[in-house]
Figure 1 (tube, rainbow, N blue to C red):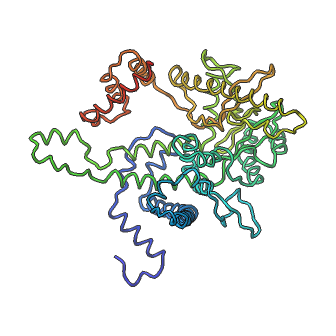
Figure 2 (figure 1 turned 120 degrees about the horizontal axis):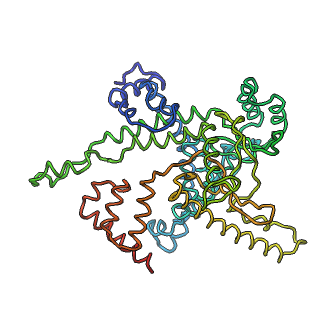
Figure 3 (figure 1 turned 90 degrees about the vertical axis):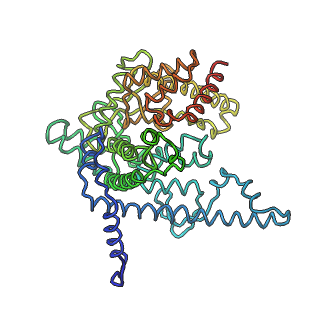
Length: 511
């Protein structure tokens, strides 16, 4: 209870934390088994309740400060100004606010630029000058500031322009490899600190390490949420890519884990709403057992643990090194065993890889989304020639997109070893010595294994949809694959709606 002795914010926070801890038992959040590394298991299972909740509380306050102060407030003020201007313009035509809202264009909204006093853009010092920043850039930079947990959501939305406006998707795409960079000298110090023990144990030569550090370029070629990549040279191996993890990113992810687990546990604890008509049902006991006992029946804690465990896997570059080698053994043009997939996979140098540093073969290529190479060419080279080259480039990229789709399907259905993060920043167009182009893969922080049972079930599902038109069997298969909760399949109205959707799918597939 609050009283007159509470004199500052710190005391208020202490009281609030104590009260919340008394009313919310988050210990059960650690009782779910998570199939992940030792580090993430330690975060999930060996947490001190008081410290965990305090960390979650502080992280929530930090997130709220960024989202409200740097995103919501400027956007709301800008939105109100736009609405006010629209109202003034429409008053002569006697249109009300509802008509204005109906004409609102979300794509244009995200392009609206407002003053930016936060120096978000690449950490630049503007020397008192006021920059402008669009709403889409503002949200993007806020996600970047919040760290890799929230960047993942932004990256997912960036690949879905069918879900979010194109202007927002374009801004979010910078989260793939164009994030704010940390200092190059800091990166060099991290490399030295991480690899010096390898010199002491004899795994690598001291002179080779010095040569690597000497050749490390000043500016990174890519900067992502967890680390940034530099180009360097390794004696006897030529050009290499050196990935260095951002300082402090691990602590940030741990704080996010505490917060998300506390929120998930709270949401899981909410009881389900009573059914008003259940009192007249003679089979209440049977019906109640088949319905969710909670307001949210999804296993939120388990889902949160699974999501965060994958991020912890990415934080250990030794996992990525092992994933890269595993992927190369199957799909590499040089040594892969797969008959269906043949792509360029960089060779990883295991002796040079640690938890925070990854060294692998340098691959030259361009993004599949990059078709601007000839748009800014000098006119003296011939506009017609440039147009032809640009057209050829687009056609090559589209052909490689088909290769990428076929490759993903083969990974999913044939081998079961799947690159789980194939966004535009991780797929390259690579031109070989003979002039032909092929597909290259980067970033192996996430590699999924699809069990044989799931692969067989997916194939059967497709076959059933195309050939048998047995909607009931397909519905049951969705339940077996846990794609749809069983209690929904047991609901006659829900199952009927699913059957109607499948019938439409059958008709469209067989046209």
